[in-house]
Image (tube, rainbow, N blue to C red):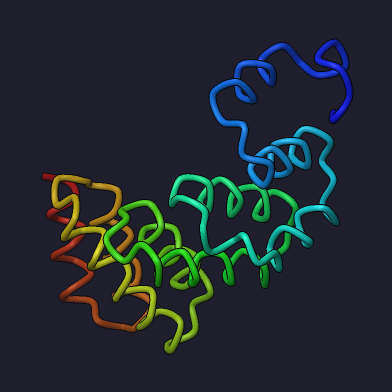
Length: 152
C-alpha cells in the first residue's frame, strides 16, 4: 500500500490528498491490508493522543473487527478522556461495557450512555442501550422508562 498510487485502490489517492498525516495513513494502510499487528503498534504510538475523535473511533472499529478487545477499550477510554463530549465515543464505550453484563461494567457503561443521551436526547438507540444497562443491573423501572422513551 505504500508503493506507487497504481498499487493502491483509487480511493486511497483521494484520502492521501485530503489527509496526508503519516500516522493516519498508517491506520488506513493497516486496515486495507488487514494487518492487525500494525494496529497494535499504532495503539501504543506516542502520536495516538494527538489524533482527532473521528480517527480514534475509526481505529476502535478496526480493533473491534480484529477481535482486539483490550486494545479497543484502551482506545475508547483514552479517546473519552480527551473528547468527553463526543457522542460516538461515549456511545461505543458505554455499549461495550454494558454488554459485558457484569455489575461494575454496567454501572460504568450507564455513565457513558447517559452522556450520549444528554448529547443526543432524540436518539432512540442510545436511550434503548441505556435501558439495557439498567436491565443488566436489575433496575427494571429505569429500564422500562428508557425503553418506553425510545419507542416514543
